Image (cartoon, rainbow, N blue to C red; front, side, top):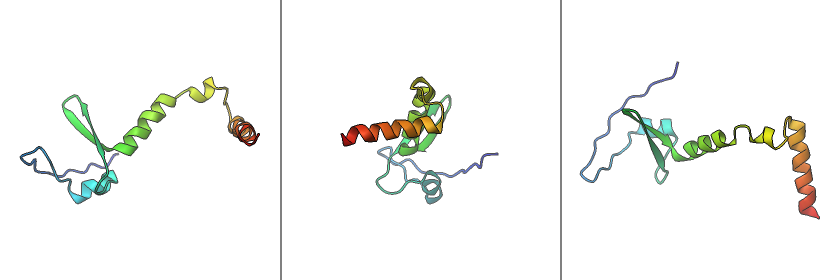
Length: 89
């Protein structure tokens, strides 16, 4: 079961909030980092923007290895070796 962390943050006059320390730690963010807010029905999900970007990329890449003919780790290793050989030419 997923751990649920509940905390409160006050909305200031300009719409800004300060994220409580335990929320920042759970998100893995610190000063200067970006967060992504995602509306899902009647809820808002907050994610570390770097983590969100990686999830979007991973979703977009589903099936691409197979389409490229990469069906095993050996296929990937062979492709890398070919690319390195081309770069050194």
